[in-house]
Image (tube, rainbow, N blue to C red; front, side, top):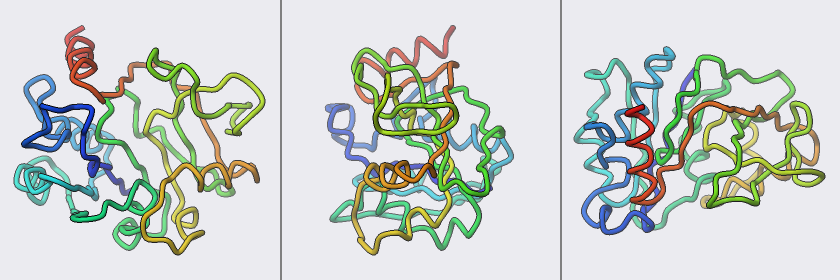
Amino acid sequence: MRAMILAAGRGERMRPLTDTRPKSMLSLQGRPIIQHHVEHLVNANIRDIVINYGRFGDQIESFLGDGTEFGARVHYSPEHGQLLDTGGGIRRVLPQLGEEPFLVINADIWTDYDLSRLSLADDDLALLVMVDNPPYHPEGDFVLEGDRLVTEGGPKLTFSGLGIYRPALFRRTQETSFPLGPLLREAMSTGKIAGEHFRGRWIDIGTPERLLEAQSLLEQ
């Protein structure tokens, strides 16, 4: 399986820490966040990795290089100027991700989820890993009914920023820049999006306070 790390966000909520570097290059337990992700993927035997980046993203490329030092094969998708949003960023690199299902993980999360467990049923377009709603997102995102994700009908869980996708999901639109949410909701309406409820360790590293929280979590 191949993977993509989404690292093109501007990190506005992380300022002033992101005034001179990308969020994924901030330190977590003495290593850049992006290194944690690459090592997590390699430990699951996922070695072909694409990383998109925006402002200051050349720092990511300078640090990781071609990935050899970390046991990976890393490729890059710079998004200078207009960012492509999540959906557009993934669609742009489909040729590098191939025709098989691929894993996508947000650069601004941390989790101990076993990535080697992720798989996608033949009829599904995606599987999203869901988590309990954190205090800063109490309304959640999607409803998990059995192993299906739907938009309405019960208490919602929060999308973790980790999932596995089929390329066909992103070929449903010809747009260049677009969010992922509408594509997922459309596919949910036809029962094509699977989900699972992960109850292990997970945190969204979206603010300086939550970065400190992640640091404390990893020290436990």
